[in-house]
Amino acid sequence: MKEKKFRKIKSEIRILGVDDAPFTPHSKDDVLVVGTVFRGGSWLDGVLTTHIKVDGTDSTSKIIEMVKNSRHLDQLGVIMLDGVTLGGFNVVDVEKVFKETGLPVIVVIRKIPDFKRIKRALQGKFVDWERRWDAIKRAGKIYSVKVKDTIYIQVKGIKLKDATEIVKISTTRSAIPEPIRAAHLIAAGVEKGESKGNA
Image (tube, rainbow, N blue to C red; front, side, top):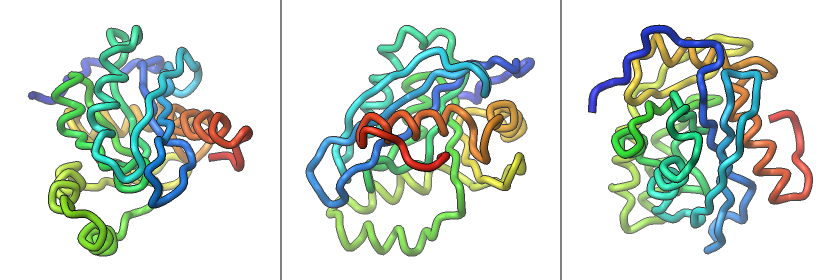
């Protein structure tokens, strides 16, 4: 599938920001995943939810299903993920998310991951570690973006220039884009009764 071309990126581009709720590591629990529909970085239009398994393999299919079943689908311009792993090592195949939804994916990363450590952890824990590791690698090259602070992104189905502009448009109140920040706060508040920190 070809990259999505944006003639002009509007300040109110609809962004779906996705993050997971706090969870008990190494459990068999379900994890709440929250998606926030934002106009740029200033206006919350909707909230989507789904559940995945801790360290499971269903994050990709659950995100695709959540997006496709949303009444906001036709308005959405891009999906933003807070990293490529949710619920521990439940790895999101961003390439598949792009192909199945038709929406470009921007992965937001707060600091550069230690990939050697991640690979060792996968090898020591999962029989299917190679499949998970392959999905992590296919998320692509990591690029730095300077807004309020330096954050990092990976992109799928969108030009780096356009992704960078979208990140800058949506980073309005903290060091990370507002759709991700709001998804984090909502997910933590629902799971714990109250969110902690500023995300």
